Length: 219
Image 1 (spheres, rainbow, N blue to C red):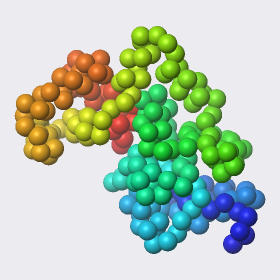
Image 2 (spheres, rainbow, N blue to C red; image 1 turned 120 degrees about the vertical axis):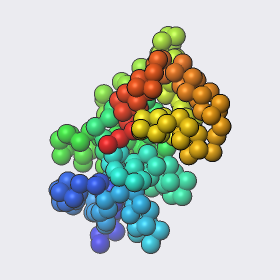
Image 3 (spheres, rainbow, N blue to C red; image 1 turned 90 degrees about the vertical axis):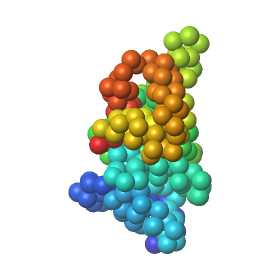
């Protein structure tokens, strides 16, 4: 392998897309794909086996260990690896959560090949890549208005709140959720009421819609 090339791992659960992306990345002079995987668990196994990339092109929506969980694991164990997220979600809430997990850039799946190359170069040389629309969305969170302050407050959810939100988006009863999280029914009622207020929703269905819209729950 040419030592001048940046090493890339692709993580996406669609085999056809992985192959097409690998061929595209390998056509760029500065980069070489050293592994492709279909989910976060395989990504962890690959890295733990000693295959360490410079950059990971990471799909957000994967079965099992998704992009959020994978990014958090990488932040804890290999913060030197730079992560580019592939996603169809570009809500402010999803972007903030990914930034908290150490992600260095975001790419929509419908981008032009030239933007993919530019993003890979930017991440490898400058440490980050934010497209114009992403920068605008993030900047809007910090505008000094009470409405925007409310939005950024909502963007910062605790791990426990996120887990509750995921479970509340299933057909589990609140009693079953309490058992799953090892919490009392009263504590679950507290999480529910707090999230109703924090997310400005009035029902469990409203929470589920919020979770799907903002990439907290993916399918």
